[in-house]
Length: 261
Image: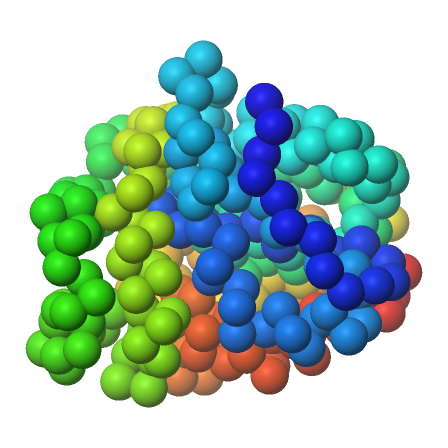
């Protein structure tokens, strides 16, 4: 399956992988800074952004990792730094584990998968978010100009939701509303967690916000599931999308990790 991809900038390849119900537009805030240092490649996962949903494509994180690597081949990318947010972070962990020769470094921004007891059913709160996005899709451009609508859509995921640019909020709402791969991806994560080894030669950094209510520290931030050499960072006043809440910190952390290879 061919994933929709963008390429910009120049230098060593840096792959950005979005989360569930999201799209490549999630990286708008940090892409310009990264493009000055790397060749930045974004992929839309199946049923997300500009990549159509294919019911024949397995949607579990390991299969999506293999799919991203296959698309690296089609773009003639031999090795890359890999950055992933949420589900994209889990996919990135799987790439590092399953295809270590293709990964220079990995940076997980609130990566999913680091849970001791996997979910056995879809979280009703996240399911409701998808349903609201679908229902309001045609009027989101209007609704998100109101602070109350912005609060409903983003207060749970970002402590800085008031400062979130309208364009970013609209991109995220539209991506969620159009995400036909959302529930297939959710179903494919049930009964699973990330628990496979990663070669110690690959520099790893995991970043969580101290206000991440989507993947809270009490359940979704199990440090024993990543290798001991992993650099673990908690950013203050930051939610589930560090690239929104702390863009300068994220760019700095990506560059620091990349400098190790």
